[in-house]
Length: 270
Image (spheres, rainbow, N blue to C red):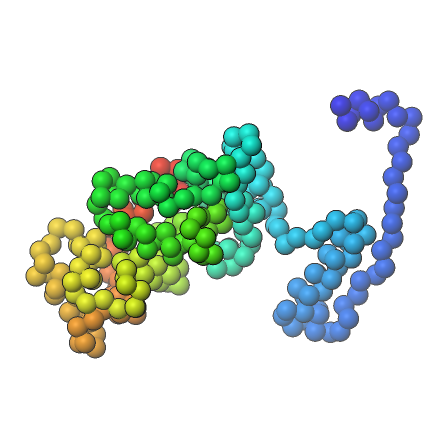
């Protein structure tokens, strides 16, 4: 239709507007961070004012994700948080790319049944297969995992929250020490259901059993004592992470199955 209209026009009109030169206000805008970013934001504001449109911080990847969301959503549905601030997430979790995000978008859409495009706890729990397909999580631990992902404490997960949570899980095969420690801290918090940053042996047995599914309680107690560097009979996050990094191959071999029900079907987990 556009081509037909163009062919029917004897000539086309356009209007050019010359904007004032936007030079850096001081040398720091060229060199010292966040000077360059402030300069870029000022130029962006000049363009948006001239065009009469609002400015956003959305990247090309955000636009692609929103386009994908519009393709896969049923008519009348919206995708909560489809514009995720993708570049900001990549600054923290460098291993994720647009392909991963698109796969997670499709997985999220398959789970979120409401028209608002948000994932309820009931849907999340069903997907995790608690005490059924996934015996590695109890209802309490599943609730803890959901609450950790629910960044705004709304009781529902938007896509951005889901993507960030899955991105933490996704780095189980990463070679980045920082990324590995991040997912280990996330796992510790899931099983630390009381949220006090440490666990006695009875509480720690849950996560130890996940990492050592075949061993007896006596062997788990030996592992707990090995982790407990200060011998206070409590396992804190740092002690757990330090030990798990030293045994990462066997740890992640078992730990990834905790999250498999929610991500593996749609290749969200590399």
